[in-house]
Image 1: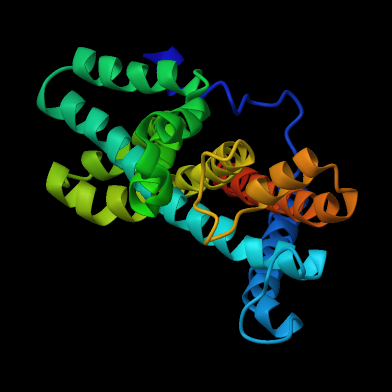
Image 2: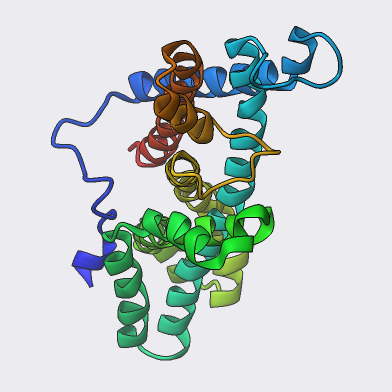
Length: 272
């Protein structure tokens, strides 16, 4: 089972880990950038005349910020769903190991490891292309997008949970005479929340990238909501560099910020 307790392939362990302060600073910078993007996108209507913006006539920066409202809100929704599904997957594997045997746990989490190595992001445009009307439905699209991130979250959450279960303070608590229920309530649940939430942040950059790629092909969010990926794809097809640069730059910043937050959360949880 040792090989299953390692982080998923998408997040290899570095031979020279980033210093804790540097990782924290990078995560803090990512959070600041993401908050700034969210606030600027929320205030985008104030940059245009009137309550509505005709995208073809709008200022490219204002239009790109408007698109950010769709991309960021959808990414947050899908990330919460994907993180919850992934954490639930890891907890289910652990529970099967407790109630059944180690083989059930290994098989359950091995499926997550295998799926995490596959290009699941292709399911988002594929589903949109095959299901036609599903493209205009945010809820089903969010579920499909969340499912593409859940295996990676499950693999990492299980690795973090397995490391926690081997911690010395749990052994000491059992040696002190505490029952399994008391160990679970007093020690395991409070200490498991941080690593599991850290694993859940891995879903945010994945769902943002998956949605942007699908929208780039015209198979993602409906046009009424707006998406950086859709705007980048439209500008590229029209050969309009003025309309291309703002959404591409904002999307790149958002992807960097979400990756920085996820990496900092995971690295911060592994500090000695």
